[in-house]
Image 1 (spheres, rainbow, N blue to C red):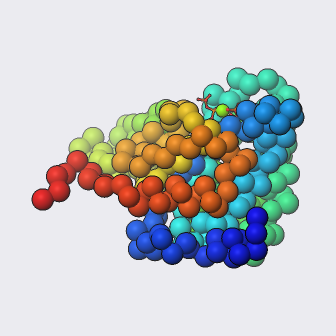
Image 2 (cartoon, helix red, strand yellow):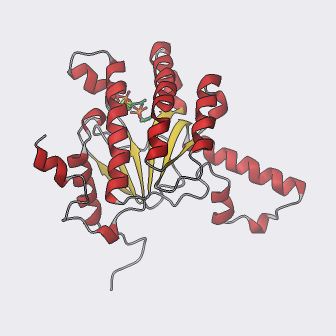
Image 3 (cartoon, rainbow, N blue to C red):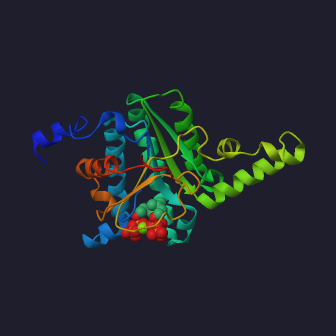
Length: 252
Ligand code: IPE
Ligand code: IPE
Ligand code: MG
């Protein structure tokens, strides 16, 4: 990358409208394995490079003024992968969290994990709890990592929590509305994503944020996740800013 290009991308590119940025971006970081295969490398090398891409996207969101980023790191279905890949990913998450905590503090990042965290290795759960606690008062950017996350499971959990409140008599059936439902999702307190980015070409949601994605704009790029850089992100935001978000209404 040339010096002038990197300086240009340190701040919001001038062809983007600062007032029309998505408040919350969700990303399905897909294609690590295919990226590695194309380079003749083992799959885990793709995951390793994927961490660098995520770090830079987080920093870029902060530099350009996007307030919330949610990344899909591991789905409830990903347990079905070969054991050595699953174990590698769990160890990678733990190592990266430990390594990056100081920098997240310095950059004012508030990190949160969503998903069924209780099923993760205990040492990873400890690292997760520590990072969430240490960064809880940070305000620079809200960074959410979906780990052992499943959208259907999240919706079922919310149903169970609401049903038990009805059963114990602290909530009436008539009081169950969208706001109550959202308070019982893992993402309570976060605005719904305005933009979903999926890398590596697949046109599907893969059980990610099913409720929250109701009106997200979807952007799919053929680029594999480890190659997703600021130029790619710029392209995604340009596409987003050209959309006409009607929310079911008609333009008069
Ligand atoms: C995404 O890349 C990372 C995770 C799901 C953890 P993949 O590992 O799914 O890469 P492909 O889709 O096999 O190329
Ligand atoms: C979605 O990618 C999950 C993550 C990025 C963590 P997958 O690679 O698991 O999705 P499918 O299998 O192509 O639907
Ligand atoms: Mg994949």
